[in-house]
Length: 393
Ligand SMILES: NC(=O)c1ccc[n+]([C@@H]2O[C@H](COP(=O)([O-])OP(=O)(O)OC[C@H]3O[C@@H](n4cnc5c(N)ncnc54)[C@H](O)[C@@H]3O)[C@@H](O)[C@H]2O)c1
Image (cartoon, rainbow, N blue to C red; front, side, top):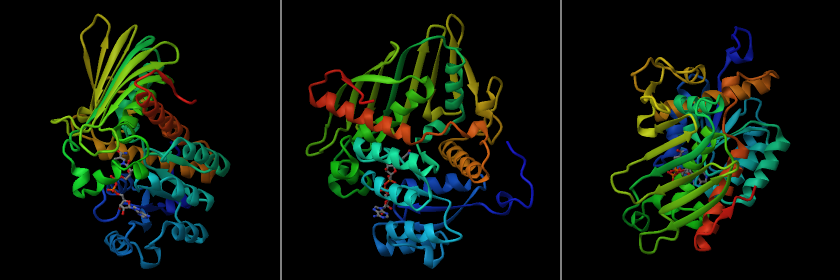
């Protein structure tokens, strides 16, 4: 990591962050803000925080955003921030899925780096178009597949890459919740309503909302490319338009196979993300709710528990660690690593230098395209009766 010194722009100021979505009553915007604040690298200075003008302004006031940067439209915000001397360095896009592509395009076209939540866009067509826009812009684009920010997920990836597990043969992953077990979406609950509306969420319900996290986690750790899927998507609540449960078989290029289960109707599972990855020499298991521990079994030996910050933790994990072992870290800190790394990528671009290597493993627009390829292949496979369907790579 470069040593900072007074007199540089980097020492004189934090990066300026704007946000689209995330006003009062929203879920993930507040998480992004906590993550951004965690390492003193960002100031939140502008926002178009809500679809509702009154809420947008009130929410901006809550955050201490000055009046002329409390926008009521993201189009206006992209234009005005792009034109300001002290304009934002990046925007976080935390709106429902149908409002990712438009804002991302507008901010990139105004010279502003983008941090966008998943799934990257409403459909694969938009994802591919956005990839071209990002490439043309040369700007930093970060996709908050935030689970890649956990230190021990990064260690798992490094252990697979250095051959500790041998050749990967089997992957099982799941992301299961229970909050849509009843017809919450038909009772006016905002987050449930847009997630089950194909015009706002896209073609996938649970598969697009959380299945894409499990897919991304498996891809990130294994480094393998998913070739085809055989999916059974179902909805268990009358009148619900999108899937709330999916069972998917996976075939990877190179011969590994696996399965992915995603559900939002599995009582007792509040938010359970988990993965097991098994090779010719050993296996790894990790669960989001127990994210400070990684379980490693060399074949034929007892299982070892590697704890964040403890013995056996690798440099790649320690780089994203703030607290000593057993001082619990979690969701916000993992998210915070994405924001800290995004800041480093943006400063490196400004300073025309190579970024810290630990900051470069961020999910970006290509991962977003792969996510949409996965979602759409699952939807197609299931619609056709559960036939093996290739990802449109
Ligand atoms: N990475 C993760 O773990 C994670 C977790 C939850 C949600 N998400 C993703 O984050 C996004 C938002 O999800 P959420 O649960 O926070 O939704 P939400 O409904 O709680 O919040 C959406 C926000 O967008 C605002 N909005 C809508 N239209 C707007 C417009 N035209 N201009 C400005 N703001 C507008 C709404 O007013 C609201 O503030 C989704 O894409 C979702 O998939 C990611």
